[in-house]
Length: 585
Image (cartoon, rainbow, N blue to C red; front, side, top):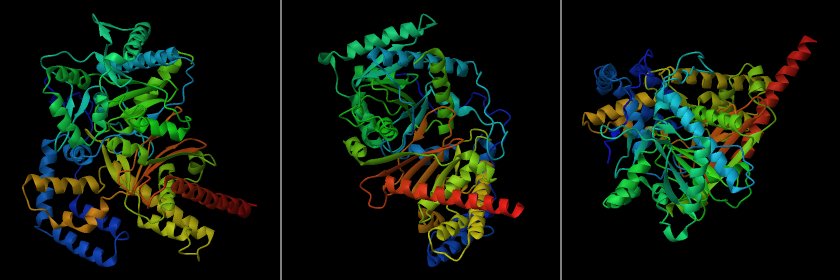
């Protein structure tokens, strides 16, 4: 097998000129941690937590010792939290990748009249992939700049260079993110085509010449015909990658004892990406059904085995027009996936006219909802941040204000990934309680002030997060460096409040697009919700997921509450405009 370097081969120089991620001041983080949790735990529990935090941060105490070690780590590393964060967020997680970890982008429904149409679409897409990779190879991709809060700052581009060169290797206790670089073999110049649960190698460069779309189409036709030969079909081995990570690691260790299996796995693991030619899935292709089919392929009885979840990019092309891309999330964030996907869809448009796993499939409850009463332009006219506004609406929908995860990009710094925006602020809780009837004495003007206070609190925390001053990465760093030093588990991190602070019942993410597609993912807890949103000028797309076997969650009920909350918030803003207009007259 080739020599696989442990990711990071982070040597592309795409972080040149960017500052290092700062280490926040210890007392600042401890104070903010207490502020974030004060209204989420009972008073008696909070008093105990405050005592533990004060002891941790005392002069000359363990907190200051660990803080100094983090500062020393920052001096030696491009990004002091990167490896800690990657392992904690992804590689240590033993749950299956589909639904639990891998987000998807759902393309607009395609109208394929014949099988040839879907293969031609696949050939266009592969050609676009090769064009995009050529930009990366030439380091010709334009630098991204921050939008929204503190717009205009250049962003780290490292994540783009993992799109086609990374692979998540399963391990018995922890996975490894590897970079496909070898000292003995050339860089891969092939993709893997999955068809009828079989896997085929498609060389996209032959004799130093990249295949054109006509050649790609011819090869895809051959693959389709070969896959139809039932006598030579092998078991749907792709299903193994949908199992728990430890179980898949054990199965893989058995497989590689055979030399043929070892060579086959090598080809899959070193490919640029997968293209999955799926058969018709059966149900009506509503937005919700297409989202479900992208997330899990419909399970083993449909296209659930026609995949390989360890690869960062799997482009799914259903002959019924259900298309999209499945992402293994550990190498890069959603915005990188969006940028790549938008390039491909624009390229195609320009070029053409056109049983664990079984239980997961049955259990996932998805609702893709388009709120059409207003969009981000209406929110901007109120001089409010659309993201902060929507986050408050999500808190209102889930009125029992709980620990909420919203990712914030820290790509302003070298090798930056994300930190958490803690959206369940005390200001949001005050507004939610008023709007759900717990404080009926306030008039509309007072309610609107509470809404603005909640939005301002959300915006302020967002700015803290994107400038490297949020609390979650810092606390993670303190916890992990204590482990490295073989210290006994510290009381701060065994405290029940800390456990509660990391139980994100509501996991949210803004993934805006400029073309017609949307992103979705599953919940991170059995009783939780996944809520991805895509604000557009005159509407907002929400993709809400939960698990059917939880009595505490229901996607339809959440969407209903979300719609009602957005209408109520919009009404408050409209009333203010009307009042100002009347006062002017």
